[in-house]
Amino acid sequence: MINSIKINKRINKFNKIIKIEGDKSLSIRWALLASQAFGKSTSKNILRSEDTLNTLDCLKKLGIKTKFNKDKCIIHGLGLNGFKYKKNITLNTGNSGTLARLILGLLVHSTTKIKIVGDKSLSKRDFLRVTKPLGKFGAYFKTNKGKLPIIISGVKNPRPIYYVENKGSAQCKSSVMFAALNTKGQTIIKAKKSRNHSELLFKYLKLPISTQLRKKNDLIKVTGEKKIKPFNYLIPSDISSCTFFIVLTALSNKSKLKIKNVNINPSRTGAIKILRSMGVKIIFKNVKNYKGEKIGDIYVKNTKILRAINCPSSLNSSSIDEFLVIFLAAAKAKGVSYFKNLSELNQKESPRLKWGSKILSLMGIKTITTNNSIKIFGNPALNLDKKKIIIKDFLKDHRVLMTSVVAALAFGGNWTIHDKDSVKTSFPTFLKVVESLKSQ
Image 1 (cartoon, one colour):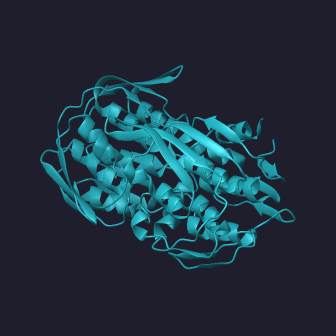
Image 2 (cartoon, rainbow, N blue to C red):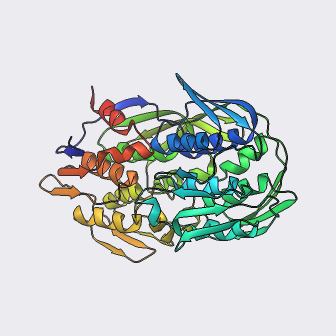
Image 3 (cartoon, rainbow, N blue to C red):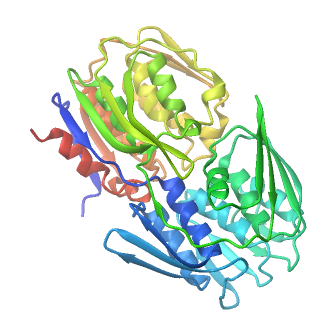
């Protein structure tokens, strides 16, 4: 079976309404928190990706009953410290850093040894960033030089900690917050700005959490051992996935797009701010609050002239998953765009900063790239119709594949993109949505 995509012509202009699958960050967090509630929780529009399915499989191994029923996912939680499992189990977290790091937080009180493994890509990523703070609760970790596989031995009575999160990683922050759920006393986190889905869910569930928002960091206090009631949740669409179609629309002549019911949480809209600064016409409509999250419809139009940007690093954490496709907008902008302090990009499924530079280079775009920054020399007249480009060996990073598809459709050329199944980790219907834009 051929596992590659061949694209040899640009997309025609389109004017479409699309719906994107559920937000991955919220899908995984809902499932993990529902496992800690006592009773039946239900979610609609949960993302049915490999990352989410791996989350449910891990919970099943921990004794949690889960079930898909048409468009619903049902989880029967067993309460705090309610996991029931056999000795020496292994949890396979696949490609998901969110799952692997957050579930470690839930396991700090589990005194039986549990092994955490992942795929080739995840096994290259740094886990000391969570095992070090989680170790302060009293848990013990055996790692492979700070990477997976990891064996965790929890502690019966974890102690609250003070933790400084200085990477702007919502995964690190959330891992500690999840550990604090079943820890007597108050855990205090001083965290660099990052996504705040966990904080909003804690507040919605009326858990003892207080947050002080500051200019450079947030102060979060979590008091543990508060019982969680089961809860129902309608997962909004994932803005990270939406951004690929926003950029495709911006780069496609005379095109328009509407995306319905999207999570536009301000801690996730850095990409929107960047693209607007570059001249992309993006409007939010029908905005409302849903259980602490801001959701709405997104309208976007093709942009004839794009401006280069000196991107403020303050937007990095709120656009960390979208930079690869943002680089495509910079490739067509007039002038030189500069993105800095991006070392976190190389802590993702693949070294994404390197891959961003590589894709642009294959397209004939000049870049100057360091280990944490990139300058992109835009070409408004960029035309790849005579170029042959092959994308492979990218550790099956879904964002690399989707960026390559957008580039092929927007700029032309003869592209062969390997490992098309990589989209299954976060956006299984990506190629179907692409085809829907092609249909007249």
